[in-house]
Length: 463
Image (cartoon, rainbow, N blue to C red):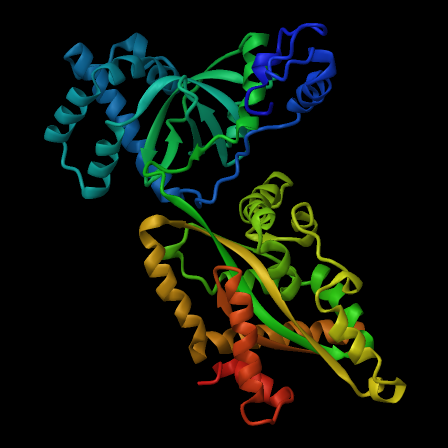
């Protein structure tokens, strides 16, 4: 029904249901159809983009060249370098908007001639090359924010465009849910931009109803001209231990009180040449539960929601940082209580050692911090090789220092000590048990466990 809601539109109550069940509509899909139809108005295509915004210098470079090109287009059209006085008196934006019709009708010829006459560096030549692939047309505006917007062409292909100088939500501030805009859709720096000039038209109600259904089809949004952006799961694995009587309190802390700056610090360890963006969820989730719940067909779907959905939800709720809080995550995945956990039996055995022993007993568990890397497909092998650097002493020391500072602060605030061990990084669920087993083998290897031994592993991973 979500994919084909239009077939139900004009069906009367006592007519045969379009789904082919052989039942009348009122005894088949009518109730569900009305519920879906009612919910449509609250669904929209997200304007979230994992691609960082253009720099001020990149925006200025494009704008100056584009304006120069449109002025040259006028000269080309009139075969004169004299801009007529009545044209010169217009606002520059108005003049440029009017000139686009002629420019895009003759774009190859104008750019070729412009290139011959002007001395241009490689950056400008690249812009002109991409401009030849621009689309000057009418597009439906489906959603907008300050930094990006989603346009749909007449073939139902969606593009995420980035703002140039003016915020898109201000430039396109109209009292309609959707609008039809005439603009130029231009590939630039492997992004899509508009030229910043928009002709705005309202649309009929029946078209608005049609546009309401677009998000329900889960359409693919093109973020860049190569359309090769991948979302790769990222998993950072840890062991945490504390006084067993404080353990459940510790879990509450690490689930909901991981400071923003710690998570941001981890993100900064990832080098940008391989990634467009890294998002991390600032919560430590119990690793064994995560693995057992998501390692199945239904779990695959939940996992894809987490990887794809949590950054989008973070963006939609107004947090434009790379750090995603637990209240966003729990819309897709809710950590179980210890009573429902896979680890419950071992926890109960540790608790049942008796009052005296429990006073001096610690309990440890394994945790995973989830994230997603938005990366170009061509950089995937480079990124896999880069992740191996997180087993070097330098990288591990940086993470361990951050962990020590974080849990020292949380421990002081809450009146008990928490001892962290960094295990490693993976990009799939299998990495959870791989890291757990490697850590256990190391701790058993000479029979001398304890905090110092764990810290040694955290710094060197057994090397």
